[in-house]
Image 1 (cartoon, rainbow, N blue to C red):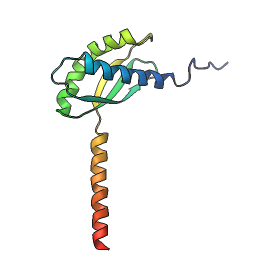
Image 2: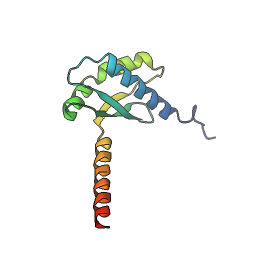
Image 3: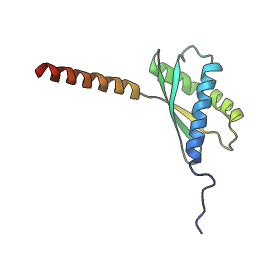
Image 4: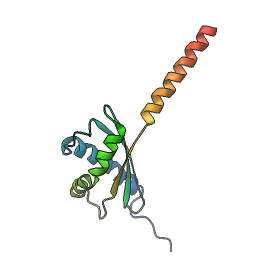
Amino acid sequence: MKRKAATPNRGFKVADQIQRDLAEIIARELKDPRVGMVTINAVEVTPDYAHAKVFFSLLVGDPEETTAALNQAAGFLRNHLFKRLHIHTVPTLHFQFDRTTERAADMNALIAKAVSSRSKEE
């Protein structure tokens, strides 16, 4: 007999809650000067909830330095998550800088350039 999952999309719900809680904890609790204005873009949780990739972007600052600072503070952040989340296993956090917004801005600039050059030709 096939076993049915307890709650459909539970992994997505947990990832979403981790994203919201991490954003608040980083803004209010983390006092590391290397971590500036960080935006948590996405969280991907493994099916066993052992690990979570946390994708973030920066308004100001050095991405490599911020990544190192966040990965160094991962234990502190995980401890605060443990107090907020009501799940058996709180995942180990792995932070990665997300370049999606940079790529989107570059693509928009290329599209605008192509459109302006095309209108000049006509």
